[in-house]
Image 1 (tube, rainbow, N blue to C red):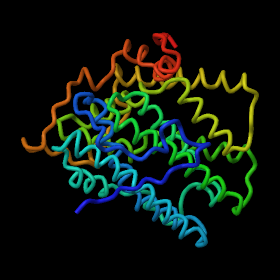
Image 2: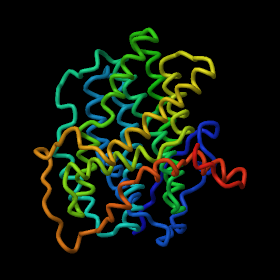
Image 3: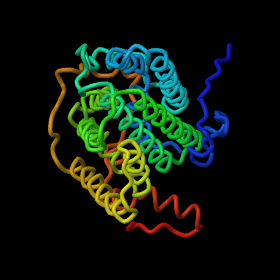
Image 4: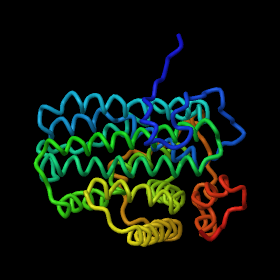
Amino acid sequence: MTTTLTLPAAPAAARPAGAGEPIRWDRFDPDRLDPAVIAVVRATCLLESRSASYGAYLTRVLPDRFADRVDAWAAEEHQHGRALRRWLALADPAFDADGALDRLLAVPYHDDTAGDRGGPTQELMARCAVEALASGFYLALADRVDEPLLRQICLRLSADERRHFDRFLQWTDTTSPLSPARRALAILRRLAELEDDQISTAAIIARGTDGTSPALGRRRHFAEVYAMYGRRHIAVVQAMIWDAVGAHPPAGVQRALTTVGTTLVRGRAAMLCFGGDRRSIERQVSTKPASPASTVTFDPSATVPSRMAIASRSPSSRWMSRLSGRAPNMGS
């Protein structure tokens, strides 16, 4: 029996070029795979696949009138995990997705009953931050990859996360009003949790199948993810954040903040490549050696980008070069 996988299309105005086309699974090209990308997709697939936990949390902390809408959102998020899992079945068939997900589900997700963000509007602001980050992440990943099927999936998911962002922002029209300053504070609090235990644990589990230690697996994951970002990805996320806050700074201010953000992200990538891990959550994750049948070998030099790679791998430059037909400016 053939299973149909449907990813909802975002409105045309909100999606990148190519994001609205039907997913062409026949375009998969095994000759254009990158072990570092596979490792990132493994972790992302695990995070997207536990959408039921995210939905249960939101149902708990938001008014009852949002329950059906939260369930619909969680179901759509689950489709993201299914799409990435289907791609992994082609690119990395030895990966035990079921076993990995079981280990991630053993880690609690916001096990407190009352929520910790201050109220429904703050919770929705936090979700807006997550959806903005997810949209920017998938756009950066699409610009990073060479495999055509994964690129199309990432463009679709980026547009879908933007649609989810718009949805959560619209919901705040029916919750207690917050000033732009308080909205910004709620978003900043969530951004400060960017390397939280959920992502760290997923990264450790995803890379544990190749014998990577927890601390090294965490560093590799975040270093590779941060190295993908260029100016346009930071600018996309920033624009969405300003929409959520309800403020619109002058273009010059936004350009300056984009420069600062890009510098900070690349600096963090370099720090993770050459510095120590700031914490370990080894106690939360069992790092059992993988069986020979499920072992996938990753070359550390390919998985952890060098400083030169961070400087030269500018997705924004590559994107511009595609449009202009010129060689990318490696210093952008």
